[in-house]
Amino acid sequence: AMSMQMASQNDISDRQILSAILYHHEKFDGTGYPEGLEKHDIPKMAQIIGICDAFDALTTDRTFRERYSSFDALKLMRDEMSQQLNQMYIKSFIQLLRE
Image (cartoon, rainbow, N blue to C red):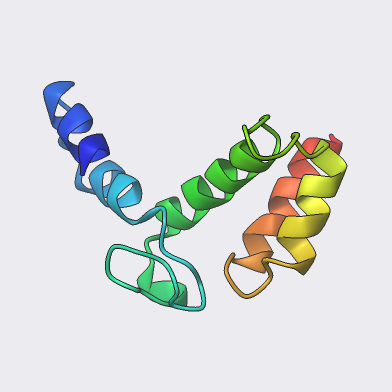
């Protein structure tokens, strides 16, 4: 993957960081990629990066839609993406943004 190449070009060799990069598109329900990992088979750091990535994608303007507000993005992640994302981490993310 391109992101793995970028990491190695920048002398990133920590296995936890590399696995977080590699698996951050995995979904809790097994519908993600590259390996279709489920729930706690997905490294914790990858789950967290996946949540940050989803939030960033939702709150950024796209050619096909306007960006969501932070509130609406979090609501969508909590409700409509509840099977795909670790809801314990979603709750922590919401608490973090409230502070």
